[in-house]
Image 1: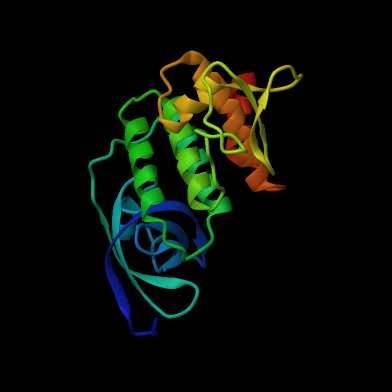
Image 2: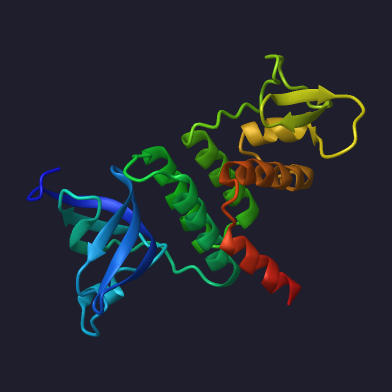
Length: 237
């Protein structure tokens, strides 16, 4: 993109921001058409800046920017409305979703399907939906979008998953039917429920949480999640 080219009317969410100079911010945004990218918001920290009430996390924004370098320059920001503000536990869970995107998505790599999944998850959390199913759906969508092929309907050999069978999930191989083993296993019904995005069964909720935590942790490697640490600390208090 040339230095004079301007992009307008882009749907985006603010994932994170940090100060730049005395009056500006660098924003890390997740946009539907352009993926995750950094944008310089000049003057956004000034007390009377109109941007102070617009650049809000977990709210759908319409952005415009220009510039040909790695960091674009913000030209326009409008709040689209329609999503209640996240509060309490759901606010922490929102930070967890943001942190996953920041750590696992490369910059300027568009993922419109994942953007829609994120918007749906934030909207559901803001409107009081049961948070656990929303987290599992988003984690599954994120893993799929970053190229981690997940198959919950068939095992590593291509055989259909059977509801009454127990399975182990091995990172390098996939699902393996297990008759008698120590350690964490999942029921076939849980796997079929995950495949269908159905988390109405309490056992499915419990087992899917453990599985997704293992898969997400594998993708993160040595990148710790601060949001998870804060959540654990609050529960200990």
